[in-house]
Amino acid sequence: MNLTGLNLIKTLGCMSAVTFFTLYNTWDRYDYDYHWILPFLTFISTIATPLFFVVAGITDSRANREVGWTLTKIKNLAIVFLFWMTVYYVWEPYQRGYMIQPWFVFAFILIYSFNPLFVLLSQRLLIFCGLVFILLLASYGYELLSVLYPQRYLFSLEPEYRIWTWLLFYLTGQLLANPLIADWFWRKKVARAAAIALPFIYLFTWFYEQHFFFAVFKADRNAFNLTGSQIYILVVALVVAASCVRFRRNAAVKEALLAAISKTMTGVYILHYSVFHLLTLVIPVTSLGTKLMLIVITFALSVLISRLMLLNGLLKTVITL
Image (cartoon, rainbow, N blue to C red; front, top):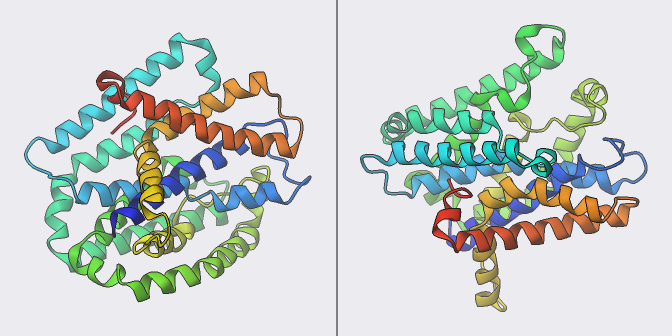
């Protein structure tokens, strides 16, 4: 994957995170009946969290994972989590905002704790592919059972706590960055085919969610549940489609803009919910237009604040992993 494609995927992750999580925090209380654009935006932005883990896998595969790398990553996670937990409990306005979630931190600690093993397995490609495939089957199987047996306590675990799903997406990112796999996936013909297939995959995924998971969809107040295996193909297709992106006009400007936004990915994930809440105190959401405007402003301000924090060495440590 070229650098432009990676920056594009990171930017898409920022935008989808802001859209997905802020749509749930407005006056309509999950009621999408008054305009079709709200379920549409929610649906296309369900890629937010899975995409974050895939990007993390790709990025980490390119890192120099020497001795001490794992402990450094875990230390960075602990600093970020403890800082925002402290802000959450000390500053009252932030309590209406987004706090970096314990499941998110635990998932990455687990991932980084076993990273030496994943590095070893990545050198045995067939075994590594088998592991990813088993995780995909396990993820899909559990989600299927949770739909078929909703009253069983064993299958009632919330999607965000299904750690094996996030491990699946992370290892998929590592797999896609493997030189042998990348040599095939990052070809222009493959990327073009993935881009052409995207609308059809989105359409298939929409019907899959609406009909197969219909009971869950209605029971959860019209909430989309596409955070697991059923969105796997869509996320992989997006990453592959972006792998060979090239700008023909104003390339330098566009690439610089993408690079600037992509560096704020983690910061936007952490900050956007609080930015959105503070904006709604000043601009009440009373219409569809207001809601859409707030999403755009939230994204822009979250990126700007993150960029400013990145300029400070101390503040940088609490918005990067």
